[in-house]
Image (cartoon, rainbow, N blue to C red; front, top):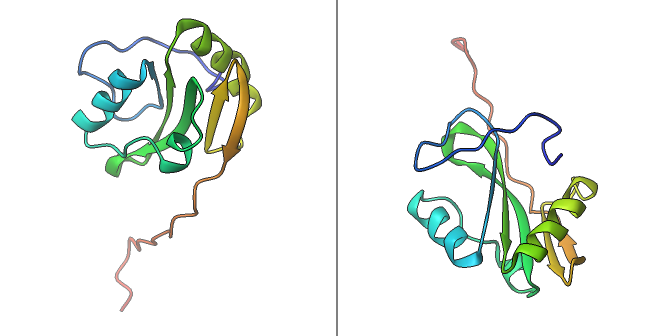
Length: 121
């Protein structure tokens, strides 16, 4: 429901580079997973809001392929996030407490670069 498409589990370290990912787990495991792959850590805006679950979007390295990260301290908090996320798709990050969104926001815009496929001369 989060990606409006079919899902398939990915196990181990063999995540596909060209498909969007949904990464979910307890906070310590999520933080370690991101660090091991040299991906951006939990956004400061999210971490500062507290709560028992966080969700945020990121882009994976040079592939520019999106990922949604869900960090939840308990299984019931994860279930609440799963129900709410499809309705919060325009947000870059959301903090949850007791199953309800308590804060949300948009990531700052990133400058775009233009690459020409032809010689400009």
